[in-house]
Length: 249
Ligand SMILES: NC(=O)c1ccc[n+]([C@@H]2O[C@H](COP(=O)([O-])OP(=O)(O)OC[C@H]3O[C@@H](n4cnc5c(N)ncnc54)[C@H](O)[C@@H]3O)[C@@H](O)[C@H]2O)c1
Image (cartoon, rainbow, N blue to C red; front, side, top):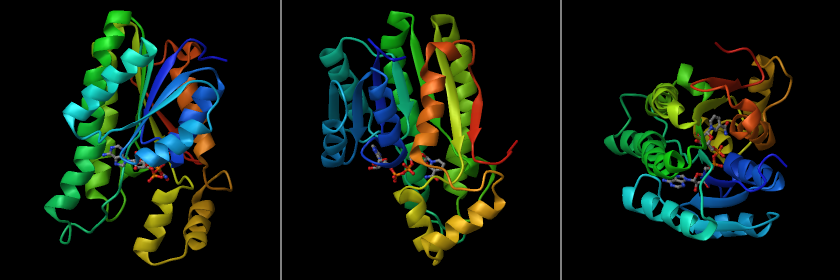
């Protein structure tokens, strides 16, 4: 029960990795707020969690929605200890086919969305002199064909984690990033569909390249996020934790 008396906000928590993180933190005692574009999905997850959970519709790329959501979390739970910036999407295309909209949607969701959430959350965390922020990067930060937008955003988040760690550390706020490899979620299912292979084939390709002979599950990332958000990781900040089933960098 590492998160008794703690309040956690997880973005993109209606499914996949965000759902897994919300579940893990709630199972360890946190009161959680699930922010997602998909309110019904967030409500569905919230209803299955132990303890007090709040589902809010929020587009993380919109400043007003982010600030309003965190204000509502503060009103409901009275504090904000953990922020996991996880909301995301892909709009893959080779550069000659990538549209402005493909670029903007991905950068606005991952990079600007995380910026807006961190800026809003740090106000509460600085006042408390306590906070844990986890940004969801990706192994794709190292480069993936068709993902110039996504790789740029995910590499950007690693830089942001380092800078925010420097700026917020004096206020007892830790900021780290997780870089998952292939995790079994709707996002990787959509990737298989885009490149025109079935999901099993994509998974087998990943498993061949992995040292650990399986693909990842949301629970693998939830365990890493819970570790970085827990007090036992209090001297770890500005780091990228690669959770990819193989050595990376
Ligand atoms: N699945 C993987 O293999 C993998 C690998 C590396 C990194 N990631 C990252 O992990 C995170 C979660 O991915 P996932 O696989 O669970 O994806 P997913 O598609 O299953 O879930 C993403 C969630 O984010 C929400 N969302 C999208 N845009 C949003 C916005 N503007 N505001 C609020 N919510 C929004 C969606 O509604 C959805 O519930 C993403 O940041 C993704 O880039 C995933």
